[in-house]
Amino acid sequence: MSSSVPRLVIAAPSSGSGKTTVATGLMAAFASRGLAVSPHKVGPDYIDPGYHALATGRVGRNLDAYLCGAELVAPLFAHGARGCDLAVVEGVMGLFDGAAGEGELASTAHVAKLLRAPVVLVVDASSQSRSVAALVHGFASWDPEVRIGGVILNKVGSERHEGMLREALDASGVPVLGVLRRVEQVGTPSRHLGLVPVAERRAEAVAAVAAMGSQVREGCDLDALFALARGAGALPGDTWDAAEALAFSPPPPLPVPVPGGSAPRPPYRAERARPQTPDGLKVAVAGGAAFTFSYAEHAELLAAAGAEVVVFDPLRDEELPEGTRGLVIGGGFPEVYGPELSANEPLRKAVAALAGSGAPVAAECAGLLYLSRELDGLPMCGVIDAKARMDERLTLGYRDAVAVSDSVLAEAGSRMRGHEFHRTVVEPGAGVAPAWGVRVPVRRVEGFVQQGVHASYLHTHWASSPGVARRFVERCVGSWATAG
Image: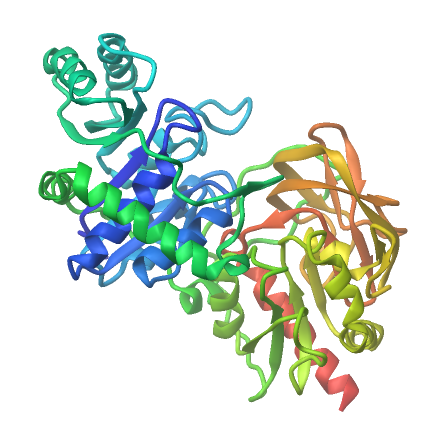
């Protein structure tokens, strides 16, 4: 099945040029016209999609050619954009910046080519005039497979400045589709890992998104942008579907003598029957302001595998949802809410009791901190015998990983790709049975596997390995049967 949804990729020469403002503003501006807008983000970032969701009223989805493989980018896009009038894809970093040492892999340009989508280049023009033409020409001619369909000039100082920029760009052959004046920064405050998530400042975030939409409506030619998007044409290939993905699973894991290394990705299709689960099997997923990092496809895969997915808020709820047989705790900012999480002793005890019963628990990054004995000296759940603390150093980057121990998520030897993004340290960094072996930035093991618990710093995208969700739900069924 092919997708013919009109689409644009919003890119820039570098970070800080205004991609998020323009992309989110375009989403809001087109949505205000009554269009169903599908929001997407290149790369692993969880925070920008929250602002996209506010602008469109639809779930923000990530398109990551490293985490999921290039072959899944178009199917996942088609899944998210199904039934929409327009899709807007916000890029990552500079247009051609991809995974370190991997060429164009996972760059905005790579994703634009996979989607056969035109690119709109957002240029910070605050400190240049005629030079903007050389910059745009360079980006437009660097890769002939990347079509730069227009430019939006950001931080333009005056009408005179705008005239100089337009005159310089006249000869470039790349049309100017918008001009945004220098204005006081739209209210999107940052913190140690980027923008503050929507869940922590919803009222202010709503106002910020509205301001972005207004700024873009006033400064951009929306009709020309929509015409450019419509010119993308049909995108052939499959549309990703959670239930269909679960009907197939990767081949058995390859034996790996040492952590690390690389291997071809498993094929998207290899026949296997869909699992059968009892009615009412509940998997609780942590949410709220402290745990905002999650890919939408995770919950979709769990539901397709037969689980009832129930979201709870560790900042407010003193009990796990009744009947919980599995627990997923994703990423977020528990360090910001340490006192509140620690003060919720009834829930901490409930989480520890569930883990102690052998029920499956999957924890990523923030989830690992929450399961630890303490975070910055404050008592946490005590499931993992480790201490967590804030650190000045940012740990950031893609990882090739191999499962070191059998767990509720993977068999030992299974390979996955993941991403680390944190300013915290857990000591020790690995348990007696580590979760993963990685080789970048150094060869090491990390994370904890014990009973039904899998806790690690590594963020993974389950769409790349649907067997992870299947295995987790199957273990929930087994745990339920044992408890019953």
